[in-house]
Image (cartoon, rainbow, N blue to C red; front, side, top):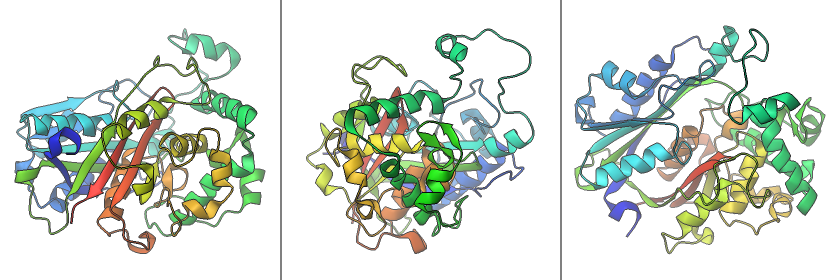
Length: 394
């Protein structure tokens, strides 16, 4: 029996236009994605009785929150029996896990989960957060980082990467296989932001952001929205495609919710979530046909490869030294749409959309050339993460 007693299945996905500086509002993009996902599931908006979004109406830099739960509820005129939004979840996957639980316990029948961003347009309009301007007192963990100029996750995660390099000999060339693989796959994705060929020389010569991260180790702010419909198994619409079951899900967090206080700084919350996920299934890493792994920074994808058991702890660099392993036609295709490093920062939901699209065989030119039935999806990085094991039902 799979996650939440096998009562919940994924029935549809949708995605808006994706691009840089589209000049469209976040709610506009969210509605496009929502309507496409509902139709893809063989449903009408009137069938939707649950809505979930991440991170909710929180104070954040420009464009980070394109639309919240009530925005979409109101715009579509939905009558809901359950709704949710919030940031304190196991990564962006938390909304899906809670939605599946709500369906399994009878609180909803069809739940629309979505994520909307318009960071590229917001930054172009000068509304992005800045380090200059009126002085304000640093609060929270920023009190301990801002005095040293560590204002960005690029700085914080780079420290993790440096520790891993020190302990296990990871090289920039090995790390670079992740953005290079993503760029090759993005060339087959009509919605990807960056599709031009990239070489290892291009990667290594790009301007440094926060060592060991260069420009191509950092994801691409963009505008776009993604939506996913989960349904109670016995009420799923007639879409004409197989259902996708959530075989297992990981939301474990075994240590403090912190960027820098883990016992082993060569691991992250991804290791906790993955351990929790594998405890719920008889499947093993060897059963996974492909993986869609969060790459807000290249090192986070490397962490997921290791955390999910595709290689042993400390051996991710050696694993990536054979880049054909993670290629579209390799033994474990990774980030088949280009990931956030090339396809754009849709903040986790893009990976879920791609996993379902591949399992349904609807990925077009980037479709994995072998039959795929099981996907691993890892979302988040640093102090919080969530993961899912998805299984196509024939």
